[in-house]
Structures are given as C-alpha cells and as structure tokens.
Image (tube, rainbow, N blue to C red; front, side, top):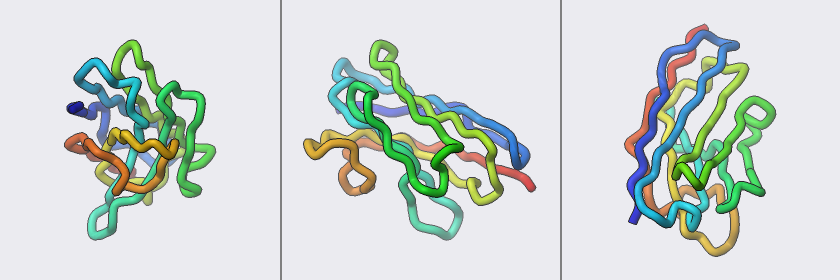
Length: 125
C-alpha cells in the first residue's frame, strides 16, 4: 500500500506558473505508474498527465499538452507536476494517484489504486 500527499497548490494569475509535488510512502514507489488528475467544481474528475514507472514515458491530456510537465524521482519517492501558461479553466483540485496497472501508462481514473487528498489550484483572470 502507498500513501500519497500532495503539496504546492495555491492561487496564481493567468499566464503564471505553479508546481506541485506528491510524496509517496513505502518502498515500492518505482512499482507504480503515477498520474495527476483534476476536478473542477461541478465537473467530473479528468485526467491530466501520467508517467511510467521509470519515467521514460509520459502522457498528457490535450488540454494541458505543451503547458504541463510531469516528472518523477524514484529515489525521493516523489512525482511532480509543473504547470506553465496557466488559464482560468485550469482551476481545480488536483490529485496525484498511483496505479499498479500492467498495461502501461494509463489515463483512466478507474485503473488507479491509490489517491492523494488533493490540493487546490485557483487561476485568476
């Protein structure tokens, strides 16, 4: 089992940048595909980005491609999300998640086994 704790959310103006980190407990962090999801008020949770176990493969939602970067450091049991050129529509609670999926990097929330508590990002116009 792994516990995930996000940090680094906050308020930023449109066009600005913000970075998150997600710290994971346990000794098997490298066994998990890691992902970031978000949920805006009144909307369903949506996929943002995911990274393979060793970090060699990444996948992004079309809405964030070219603006967001996911990375991981298995030695530090951490995954990161760096966001540039933020837009008001990026406002949401952001969650990191861990998946034991055997099918590779996955974008489906249902394939993720563990979730963090979420951190709020608010982008003002």
